[in-house]
Amino acid sequence: MNKDAILVWFRNDLRVRDNEILWQALAKADRVVPVYIFDPRHYKVLENGMHKTGLIRARFILESVQDLRRSFRALGADLLVLTGYPEEILPVLAERYQVKEVYHHREVAKEETHLSTLVEEALWKKRLNLRHFIGHTLYHKEDLPFPIKDIPDAFATFRKKIERETAIRPSVQTPAKVEVPVDLEDSEIPTLEALGFSADLVNVAASPFKGGETEGLKHLEALLAGNDRQMAEPLGSEDGSALSPWIALGCLSVHTVYHAVKQHEDKGLPKKKAAAIITGLLWRDYFRFMFKKHGNKFFLTKGFSKEAPSYELVQEALFEQWKRGDTGDPFVDAAMNQLNTIGFIPQTARTLVAHYLVNDLNISHISGAAYFEDKLIDYNPASNYGNWAHIAGVGSSVKDNGVRDIRKLQHLLNAQGEYVKRWSGAQFSLTS
Image 1 (cartoon, one colour):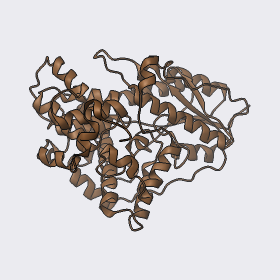
Image 2: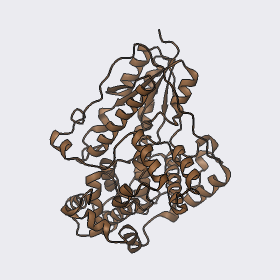
Image 3: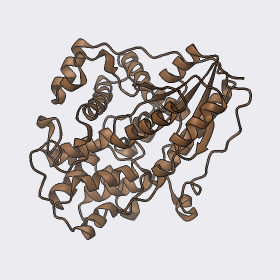
Image 4: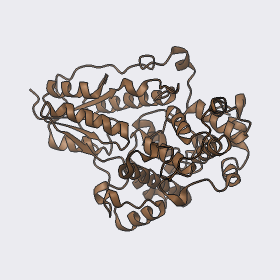
């Protein structure tokens, strides 16, 4: 009998290093039951024809789950991987392994929080508690100098106050060993085909990004040592980091990244690059806290404005051209080719293609955000829909609404002419 056990439900926290829920579970129980669930609702095709999770991101998730399982096996344990609805699976597992509690990291967007509610209600029927942790932000919610309802909407004010009045917590310890129930069942990680992707699509998908904590740490180490140009430069990543795919899925903890950058900014890591990375982490925090404060406003066409923008209602042909990278604008087309090929584009390119969709084509930013949700491997709801709202002029930080200098952004993205050359049409190459 495994009475002293805690079930750890992994979602977007696919790592064993600097993982608060794993560390807390090991401190309070003799055994843990590590679980990852592939929810079919996350891989469905939507009414608009787009995927909830596109092929390239699905592959990145699979690779990350595989790596997490290898990490657990190296610690003498295993990861239980199942497919189905968490609100149905987790109560059964909790009863089977007689766990005393279930731990998870709570998300902030409506669909993700609704899933937490479904699981919580199902577990409560078994008289079990779902314990929520807030582990995706650089600054912990409990350490903020203001309650959630009073968080400044202006990003500059938010940043100034938290940097001046709040400390960033240290990373938690990495376990040396993990005990799981002796009767933990065997499980199989599904294939892309099992998740609903056709074999012909699976065979042509390509990306230089490989999922998992191991790869994320490797890329972070290369960044700190100044050896990351092989990936960063072809991608056109202006801050030179390209860490966001691993951060988004929790293969890298934001605390791990922050403390590593701060330790190395005087040891070879250029201060400008270090500052750009930290600013990116702060924007990520800002959007998550804005979602916590304002709920679903970011999913509304009018966002934080009094009236919704007057978008054209029927623009399907133009929208398809934008998605294919067939608009005639060299910067937009290069960026969309990159996005469709590898599931990633740098922030400057995201701004340019979003501005073009909203202002040149007069198509809703909500449609653009949905397409990014399909394609981006570093997708998370808060940053994605938050950024799109600001580009459309309806975001929460009024000063940051709109795009002011398109030519400057184009030059920043393509200063030497290499970005457009590399990613234009059929001429682009991942290795050239």
